Image (cartoon, rainbow, N blue to C red; front, side, top):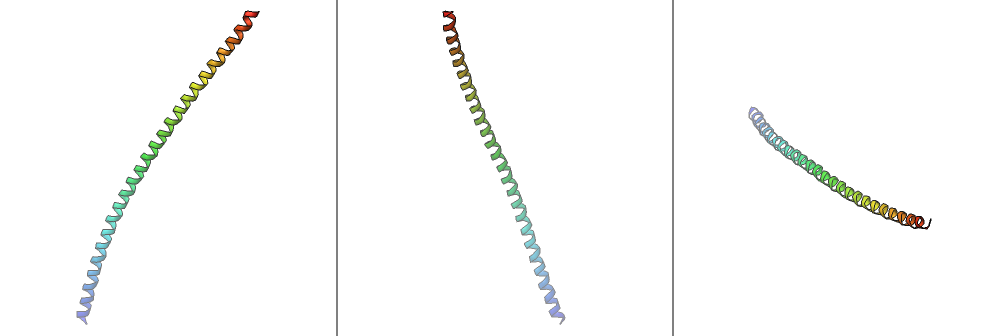
Length: 92
């Protein structure tokens, strides 16, 4: 009877050690997964920042192009006004 109790105690102690080892392994895996998640979040933030920067640069370039088109159109209109005004001024 006492021998059986001792064997059960030893078996329980071994099971406890196995559970402790499993828990330690899971804690290490959890830590590694957390590190990977942080790395992925940082990578995503960098990628988003680069994408925003590229989008901003594209919008700035489009804005510059539109500004140049507006200035060119304004210059053509001014030339037309001068031409039209010059023609009437010569007749008057």
